[in-house]
Picture 1 (tube, rainbow, N blue to C red):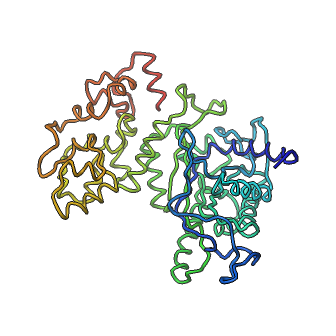
Picture 2: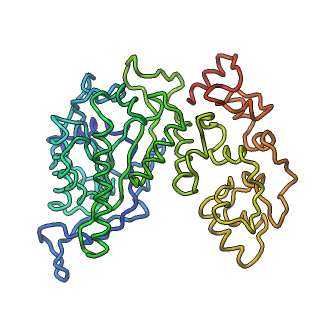
Picture 3: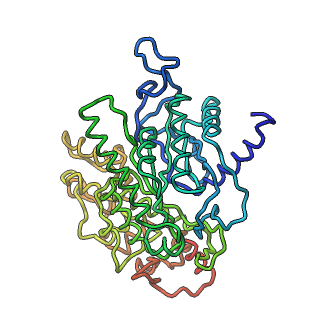
Length: 462
């Protein structure tokens, strides 16, 4: 990659930068070592097995060891095939009407970049997305060709995550699925109305159709593998999607309900939430003086974790009368202080499902509690050793009928102790009561905010 490749490096800078707003980038869920897949044409075949040797492998526990300052994984080569696009989505930097530097890679060029970066130990996999150039079919064919070459010509066994292009031919998506570890179709915006207003060229049906196709392909492949162990695997790492948060007026309850429906109806591995970043000027786009709503995004991720691993439902965490999360408390704490009739929970007798509802108790610590209490009654000292965060849990639990300290089972008291004075000042509350500290009540502020500085601080989190 010397002077003659200068144009290639220029395009690399453009297309890696253009990919940074796509956060649905994961690298877990797949186990594959060396020659686990019968790719290749026999070149450099192993003398004993007859299978083509490859480069790299993949581990189910994840291949991400390096993260950027904002928490994004950087161990994958995250790149666009092109930032040219026939669509004009109002929120997108790469939209047709924007006057920006454009670039496009050939499949061979992406293969070369991937292998060269891999050999230098810069990356361990590829995340490939694209703008829509010419047509969805043309773009999907470029993506399919790229990963076909990586697997069969370059014998790359590392992790590959690609985007399925809505509107592309089903056969192209099916062929791609046999070479990719994970595929994703971006939902873009939580509701069809938001999509109609900000992405008029995209339609909800076109997005959900490939999502359903991938789901059906995974189910069918799972049945085939149960009979034929060495059948090729289809999207072994599952599929994911992404929603932009804050570009349209949907509340947290609507967003979480959409995510819950996607998990139930399409068996997604992950739903990613991307705080809206204002990169374009448009009358239909919101103005966020406080910047992207990162704390709101964080609370949605925490709530999403509760849906997937803790047995919660969207309707338990929020409802139409209280449609936003209290940004000062994590969603489980927020649920607990609003359902004090469920507490305190006796650690030595409560079922596993009840333990998961206690703030400060995670999945691992709940399992450890269930295992440890079979041999003896647990004390608060034991809970600390098992990984329970007692500074949050102590208000909601008893050990052998006793609380850790004399505490009041009262909303105001517990919330005042769970939040710091600095947080209460930051969010415009005098800290006198829980009702005053709640930022959202029936979709409105629970008290009048008179200070301009305080209002700006609050609005920066919405």
